[in-house]
Image (tube, rainbow, N blue to C red):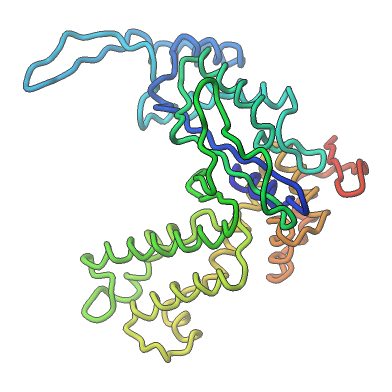
Length: 368
């Protein structure tokens, strides 16, 4: 959903508009969580006192030793960091960092879609200073080399202004033409094509690594077994994150070509074999249907979310009818498969919806 919100914000750029996208990398994020500050955060969030006592006990009196060349050091106490791989660790880290996000939202800094606040990618200097101060107060660092700024502009503006060096505290941030956010490449141009090429390359490498297990055509595993492995390991890497991007017909053709060629090879079929036969023999879906499944699954997650921002954004984008919006595309997919109408799905979850016209291009959703 975080990737989807950023895609929706970028899809709003028109004419001479400019959006600054800053991706910040928290240095050794899980390792620098202060136990004292974390416990204070959890207490003020109103966590049940019994649960708070359990978590406090888990992180009290924690010790460690260092083993080097067969020798073990004396034990020392650990006062920071959450356990790597722990079930609670991601939730504890989010509780630790959430105050920063709330602070930015209260200040109303950053990007809006219509009247919907969607994060902080555009108001560069002030936001970075707030983040820098917060990180110092809470004893973690923003990695200056892994944090980047990209400048996305509308078609009518080729040379963006404000492309001078960006700073966070005393450190310069790289102003570049591409950066990585949640495993997706964000760039100044050809963003979707770059991601499609990356996904195909990664899927091909994954497929080659499975050849030793028998995932190939002649003299390999049973084609249906190979297809199951392909579904479990290769297809998720091929399609990761693409449901949040606007994939055009040319890019879809590249993905479909890789998918279809792979299925032919798994069955040792010649290239002239009809596409319908390739799919039917394995019970496989065309690539576009696989993407549709993922888009509808994400839509289901949005409609079932308790996050009022994403719900309000969904309705605003659907009503705007913008062709590059995820919500316009998913409404078309619902119609294509004769599934319930977008508004019907929304109203089934939320029975009372009141619309108020706020400006010429956006509507604000309030829920009773």
